[in-house]
Length: 404
Image (cartoon, rainbow, N blue to C red; front, side, top):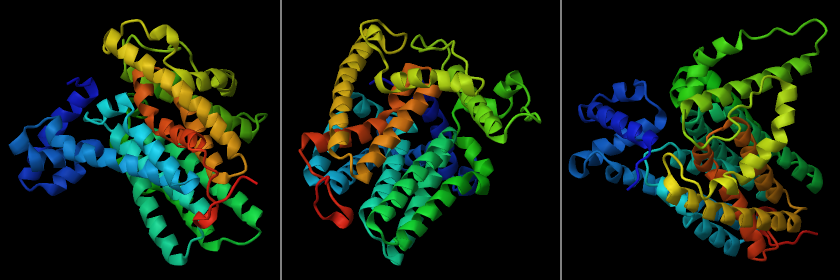
């Protein structure tokens, strides 16, 4: 079995941390300087390691649960938006995605993030397809807050995307209310609470979130990259506040991009590693290329070459999957056109487009991009399944309806 470098690091850390659990040192396990997913794998090792060994087999109960949770979320999203047939087709397609199966057996943070992010999207879809009672609002917010906390702990450097995703869902809910011409008070309160949770988690638990950052981004936050980029710039008297905000956002994108590039040095599969993003003009100029990288990388010129880690076989598998992904993206365009008057369809397509473009902006290494993109590929598969199943979609509260 292929074991990735990150997975090997996690295995070693989790095996060491599991000893504290077996010794009853739960408080040390909670406060130890390890990422959230490492602590979960340490829990598996503490339970199963003495009998199965401290390896991927002992971690498989957690990985299997997260894999099945991801498939269940894909099915539920597809069923809520397009109907049960499309949901089943999407779940089967996602389940049989070859490299996803491989990564689901590794000790990585990606399985946890994929399951959590899909659960968040399912919550947002329910906001658009159901009319909540106050009891449903309470339960949905509680579940959403837990999911958002887990996502922040897993990938702190994706925080802006988490906030953007919840804001997209809230905006779609506002459009739904305008369309229906009635106040959806419970739904609106739930969406507002989810936005507050998405924004508030890093303010409530800033120290814990430091454990969830990617190595390069964590170094950047601690001063490594920022020291080379210079101190934060103060807006001049002639510079608008809006321009300053955009410049700072662009600079932050550049910092994350450099941090992730440093996290995967000499990988041999970088794209546009020499591109630097320092201000708003750099960001806007690179945005079309970032979208192309996010949607289409690895490009065909990489499919038949040998990578330093994946080798020729790995590159060919990536090429085959890319062809399948291009077909999914083309079919998703058909699904988007057919469901162009339906808000849940636009929610899935918008979150996927924003996500893959954001990845193209900050991720230089193709291997990292490949596995970070799974959650957005899942959303595209759902929209494509809606087109393939010939579904006319569902109206709010589950009643079948068309696009008219």
